[in-house]
Length: 290
Image (cartoon, rainbow, N blue to C red; front, side):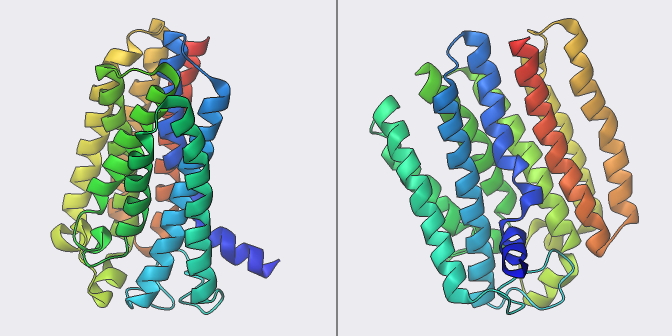
């Protein structure tokens, strides 16, 4: 049972709503357009989750190899660094999970066009490039940009496309919004890890600009995300406008809590940010389905 616990920790379950939210948001638009295909949406959902898990595994493996992790860190335990999972096992899990995602991706290419194989390859490279390669995105202040692209713009637009076989400017705006919400999850993660990352020589936006700037960026991202989706919410019955209003209302509470907490006590805020993103997209889907 302990082994299972270590692998579940490596998957970083608190963050998985980030990949799920993009697929759900896209499904909200496809439901509204009458193009929703449950089986295709399910494939997209599993594909997105597998890619995020592979990225999380790669992050743990390659950060260990580059000595960017240390024992007793503020954030969630790293099984490889703590000696609970062997590096070889984590490497196999990383590439095995990516292969499983690739097989699912082939089914989407068969349904919606073989050009999607190229997009799938870029997604796989992105999952690794976050932590690996000669220029790891996570250590060069590009983590938030990567999240916006690979957890917002790419999954929302592609999930919509493989169902509707068309593109939409409103879907694109929503994909940017989901990306910004996902970036907020990483902001809190890196905000919490500032001491560990400085000690390891890891350069993130948080280590560069500090706590106050990251709190401000969190607020800006949240407001921008709501602004980008307001047009979509107004197409639903007026009562549903309470959802973006509640989301906006929650922003000051998170920002104040960020200023008061440090270390591991910030982890629940990370989970709350990921869950609020998931609920925002789920309620958007319900607003179109009911």
